[in-house]
Length: 381
Ligand SMILES: *Cc1c(COP(=O)(O)O)cnc(C)c1O
Image (cartoon, rainbow, N blue to C red; front, side):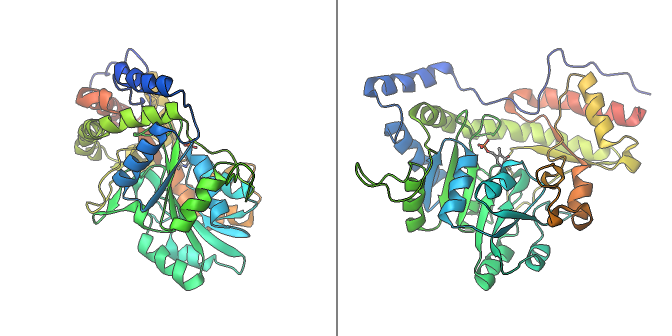
């Protein structure tokens, strides 16, 4: 039995927000102070919206105060109603935006390999009430976008993507923003690219962009005309300024995370029962999360045991996404929430563990975490 590795002196969380040199941010704030323009589409908002549209390869793009309002507004703009097919294996905001739009979420099982909604299962769930599909590019793994394109055309349903984990994700060199009617991005502090809170919506259609911009600003057309019942989803200048500063550091943080992930990838698969979730080479990695799947029989410890034991070493991993959204009280009574209809999602949610992934962790930090996991699994404690 190998020697017990030391725990970390300070808690290691699953992520640590990117914090660029403070001076870069305060210099942006000086511009804002000079302009005395704090929100409602100022200069920082315009600059960030244009920069992100380009970066994300979005034909049309609109900034939001957070990703959830971007999705809420997208549902309104696409006039989703009745039923929308979605995944239970996601953050609760995904089904919540449907509920807030008076739409019934219909949970669909996921594919064993990609962990995104299985298009064949989704197709079988289509009813006369179905108006759309809300897919999630979970962990930056794109949904089967070509299959959903066919479903969109064949059934006349809308296809909306929650791309909260898919900043910069491409499929064979094509940005994910090019697929479906719209793609949401989250710029929450826990996301690699962030503006503390923030979000964006990439859209294929220019008319939709006009409608979305009205909807996020109360539907106000001009001083005397309000032409639709909108909400307040606007990103403010301080958020946009932080976004601009962070965007300049995005590539360096992404590369630093890649070095951390490389340590995990090169060592973790050697531990029996631990499998790294890998993205296909034609996709590239958003470096939003690093996920392992734990097979308790082969590993000797369950995912939950590993998660608990890691805490004793001051390592705070996260069980994304457990429980499934369909298991929460607000959704469990839906017929589609029956675990018998979601066998793969139910099993996978009990296998997955998100390990710490952020640039500052470094290769040393990642190596120490692998040593700890090796110790826990070999000791089968
Ligand atoms: C972070 C996240 C959201 C919510 O985004 P906010 O910007 O926090 O509103 C939605 N869906 C998924 C999958 C997420 O990870």
